[in-house]
Length: 452
Image 1 (tube, helix red, strand yellow):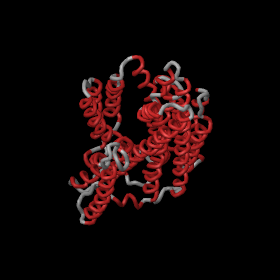
Image 2 (tube, rainbow, N blue to C red; image 1 turned 90 degrees about the vertical axis):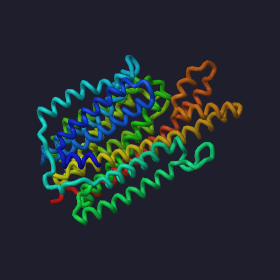
Image 3 (cartoon, rainbow, N blue to C red; image 1 turned 180 degrees about the vertical axis):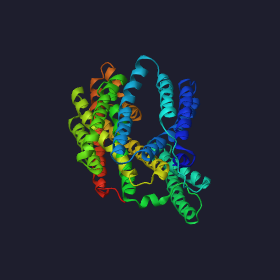
Image 4 (cartoon, rainbow, N blue to C red; image 1 turned 120 degrees about the horizontal axis):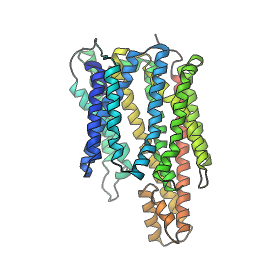
């Protein structure tokens, strides 16, 4: 949100260029990392660079295009976002398997140089010339600490415990979550007071009076919850239980990207016959149906072709829903405020993805733990052995199952753990389908046509 506002004031093209340079530099350091702190610190810098880039892309498109041209522009943007999210695991799996994980970072540098060349040569500068000059440092601190505390609590709840840690001490998670909510409430109150007094504010809260923006942001958070939760749990299932390598998992998930790229080329024609809201609803319906079908059919004998077909259908939905939902929620936003609106949208989607990883990932591990313990009990193993295997499977999120499958004379134990992973994955997939369905229902509140 902070950098989206900065792009409005200082120039979106300039912010994009600075963000890309920072992202490439951080990628170079990440690839050369020799210690964990070095890697984590460079990833932090990558996050800052990405936060400069993503709102800049959205706000630039919103400021430069209108009408049907905007529909096409956001279709291309959405296919890039959705497709690359699927191609990433494939490229990463190939690099990790055949070369080195370091190239997963160094690959960003030549691509980044191409992007920089295109931005410098083709993209004009845009900014908000009507904004009140000045900064809002208190708003920056409140929003950053509030969102950071909430995301920390959601992601780390499974590790520290939602209430108590394993040693019996109080977990920091409820404290962080409470502090985050209090800080966000304080941020909203503070921004209102600044706007009322005519001082520059980080976020113009009047944006939330636009029905398309308000409903679209909420829908985007719920959709991100379902989508990122699926992309988090599916590779664990494929590699942990079904015997796929990292490269094999990435290859299967490429089917999602193919669906996304295919539908993006059809969206300009679809936009002549369907409203944006209808396109978003059709996309979310395809996503929910594909995930539900995967929940119904997943087993130890499911074919790779069936998984690919379902992920292809899911990719069609992503290509329709992601881009057009973003275009729809920005449709009524004045172009001068595109940066801060894009920043809010990006931050809310990030919160939804963190919630998806926390909720669906936590559900997967909880179900996996219970099902593994239940299945092992039927084998009448010693209590210590049952506890040790259950702990190993649970703490590895199922990836330890591959080792059990390779162990001699451990077929029954491996089968029990594999069946537990299938059961846990089915439950998680059903919840993801229900979440996407909830997002579909929420789109009914979106206006059918833009507000004057």
